[in-house]
Length: 335
Ligand SMILES: Nc1ncnc2c1ncn2[C@@H]1O[C@H](COP(=O)(O)OP(=O)(O)OP(=O)(O)O)[C@@H](O)[C@H]1O
Ligand SMILES: [Mg+2]
Image (tube, rainbow, N blue to C red; front, side, top):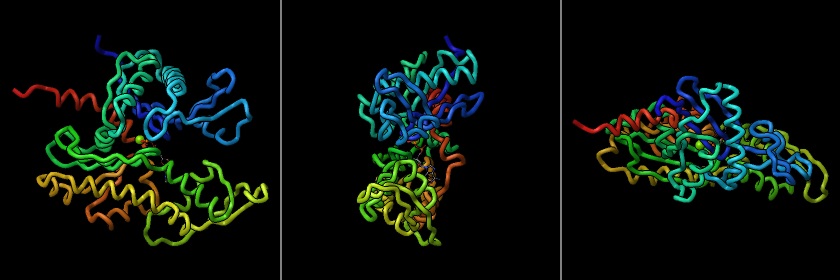
């Protein structure tokens, strides 16, 4: 039976978003679940659970069940999705019960990983589940004319994966997926501080440092920030002043890996489409692309125009929800 609501889900490593065509983004929460260790019951999800990371008593754990864009813990992801279903029914009413769900998967995901995503979504009470490639969703959400025979280049830098794809005539012409992104930048910051100052900082602190002091490798007016953590030598709390120049260095390797993947994708572009890229450039989506100076640095490195998508953190969810229209359009037989 048709007429059921269709929703798009961006089941991201860092954030989970739900989009419905009539209401837009109806849910946007960090992909975190707080659980009782003994009973395995879900105590909190989303922002509330994220705030518990690194601060919970021993009987509670706050976990991120998705890693590198795919499911690391199936049961916890299924629990997260069921709670999300309950919330969207509360927000949008019973009409959204048993929705047709479109969900995106990273291009690098294996068939087993795709199957797990599909099964987890099915278990939340979906009537049907359709999988689409994440960069195609990102491009649709970024308002690119993906169904035209021109090169649309999308660079989506998420928490766990960075995906680069050239899309033309509704499909991926060339793509690259690297399992690195914003989360890895946080880890690099933790390692840097530990190695250079013997200070241990938590994930949330590392993310705040990245927002404040994270820069792509370009000249910038230096900033500083006071950071608190645990001194590994004395075991006592300690405050440290960090500079943006040192954090910029700590992030450089991760950013270079992403740049290399972008270069490789552009090099594999069919020559007939290369001209489009020179004219139209590339479009950035995903939270990782918001690192300060990133856009400017890419222009300098790859020498084509670089644009930011209208809502970089929401593009994938919007595109996932809208994708069925495109799929229908492309599936129509040519008369
Ligand atoms: N202003 C910002 N500056 C730097 N990084 C940011 C900013 N805003 C968000 N991020 C980072 O972006 C990442 C989340 O981005 P996004 O929501 O696109 O990921 P995701 O879709 O959940 O992950 P994936 O696509 O890899 O599964 C996090 O690592 C977050 O710290
Ligand atoms: Mg994403």
